[in-house]
Each structure stands twice: as C-alpha cells, then as structure tokens.
Length: 237
Image (cartoon, rainbow, N blue to C red; front, side):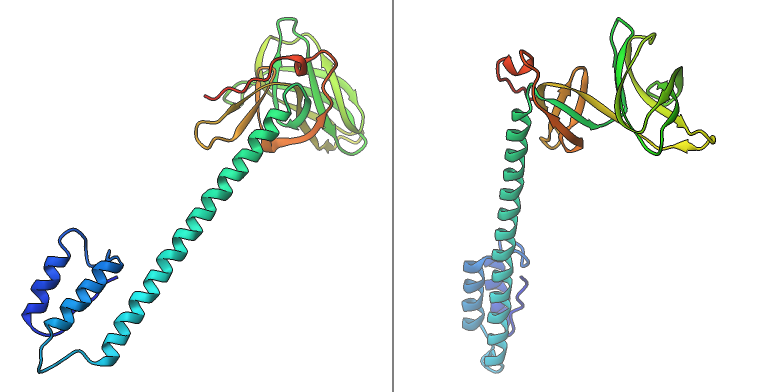
C-alpha cells in the first residue's frame, strides 16, 4: 500500500528512515502506523493534515489489510482442498491393487506368445473389424483382420502379433460400407500404484501399461488368488 506524506521536508526524511527494508508498496500494519505518526509529527503547521485526509488514509489501510487477510485465507483453503483431493486419490488408488479395471486407452502390450487381448466398445450393429498397430509416431506397422464383431463391449483374443507395446486402432465397417464408431479400452489387473512426479497424481500399473486414475470407467472384483494376495506396496517415483 503506497502512502504519500504531505507537508515539509522533515516528513520525507522520517518516512525514508522507516522504509529502509521494505518498499512503499509492501507496508505492514506496524510500518504504516509508524509512518502515520511520523507524518503527523512532521506536518507543515501552515498546512496540517486535514481530518478527511487522515480518514481516507486509515480507510485505505483497513481495506488493504482486509484484502491481504482474505487472500491468505483463500490460499490456505485452496492448499487444504488440494491436499485432501490428493489424499483421497491415493487411498482410492491403493484400494485398487489386485482389482480388474477397465479404462479409456488405446495401448496394447503383446507378450512373447504373440497373442493379446483387445477390449472394444462397438457402436451400431457391429461389422467387419481390422486391427492396426501403430508405432510411437503414429505410423501403421501391422494390420490384422479380426473378422466380424458384434455390437457392445467385448474382449477379443488376437494371435499372430509381434511382441512389444503399441498404440492401436480398430476400424469397423458396417454392412453398407459405413464407418462404425469404436471405443478402445484397456483392461487388466492393477499390480502397483505410482505417483506422477509433476503433480503427485496416482498412476495405475496394469500389466506393462500405466493408466491415469481419472480414465477408469469400470472396476471389477479381484480374481481369486490374484494380485490381491500380494503384499500391499506403493512406490513413488
């Protein structure tokens, strides 16, 4: 808050001494009161500070002090809300260990056997499907005819693929040659939970894939004797 003293030169020198370690825009309550007292003591007797001028300065100080207090309270509440949200996400992520989840995603890990599972949500009446495997640049590296697929969510076992981790796309063509919308999904068992270094958001590990917790669309019971029987462990990277 900037405060300009009126009157003679004595006021200016007194104010300068009071503001050695802070600028006029960063006055705290005590500095303002000291400056106001110095201003009153050193004012020009021929042109003293008028009551309305004093009232205006006090009102300005009061308004700024209230705004600073309000800003501090808002910041504190925002930080508390952020920590509470992160704590809730962490607890939720931990509860998913060993659970089978379905999430939005088009990444596919093909094991050494060359057979992988695809989970799709097909619109319309279904049709003929073709699988395309893509490299990191989005270039098609392989295609596979999947034959006919029905309407709705389904899991397909696809063999004869090259092992590795890919992005994939499934194109479905209807009986009249129309393009049928397809949503690609990631399905698997949550084996561990890590935390993103940038914002601390939990990341679910589903096999060799990482799934952001906000992309989940379904959670299923854990398989008997599966990862749920493993020791509880969370890692942070």
